[in-house]
Image 1 (cartoon, each protein chain N blue to C red):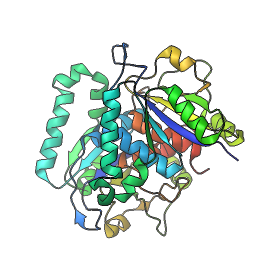
Image 2 (image 1 turned 135 degrees about the vertical axis):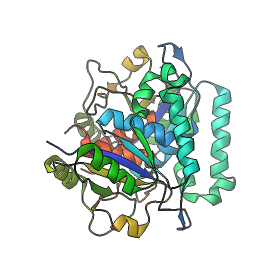
Image 3 (image 1 turned 180 degrees about the vertical axis):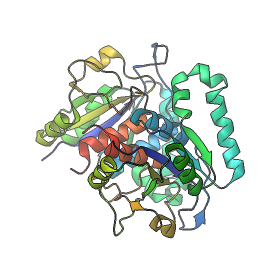
Length: 187
Length: 187
């Protein structure tokens, strides 16, 4: 059996473009794109994580449009994707949710655009996931990426996505798609 | 030498959700995400293709904000991505542009979410691109995908992205990211 891979999109603790610690606003298109990605690759749930209650309320309101409002009949396939979303204040809540759902403690896998020591390659992580019997959480940061010490506190950290140039500013939506495909896509 | 891979995002001829032939509106976030993807993977240019002149004018206006307006100094990395964008009425214009830029006739590579006969796998296309000396254009459809006969008129068609479920409704942004990574990403 291979690991169930969950996805968590963190809006705190992340940097802004001046390397200041901030809570970013939730972006609608992230919620849609990562939901559709999760539905495609069998990600059981994806988490929108922000400590700002007003932001969580906004996301819940948007979700209810697609899950029970006009959107549910207008586009049932979108409903299928968005019903995988869970809105929580912190990564600790994500871990608790996954542990309750699966009965096992999940491992956390950090991500980021910067080169750093001790990262795991996609091939290595693919093998780890295939061999691992419990759940895992892919942790993505919005803004300019996860706060450094927070990222170091995670169980693993994936190597950054390196394309064919020095440019390393993919959107978090594109990064999520590439990472999930590399970890769960067809061989 | 391997092929230079260009990307073209078509807003016509595509289907809407009722399988009606339409011209979709250009989505801002597509322009940004595919620009950042192109800058990462060394895609020389990406094309926003719509026959609707008003839409092309809107995109040009948005681009000028990031290329020469306030956005250029606010976020120079975004400028670097968006200066790869070219706005044109049709795929014929894309082909002409690439031919003029490279001196060679490009091959066109269609994409779509539906299973169909005669598609080429990502591994096969990666090898074709590595062996091919001229330019190639990855053709993506917005809305519910490229019109069937139009798609069949292209030189090649890539297999759809298959995840781990039957769900095949990725956003075109996610699909573009996964496809470009599969074709140009590190081995």
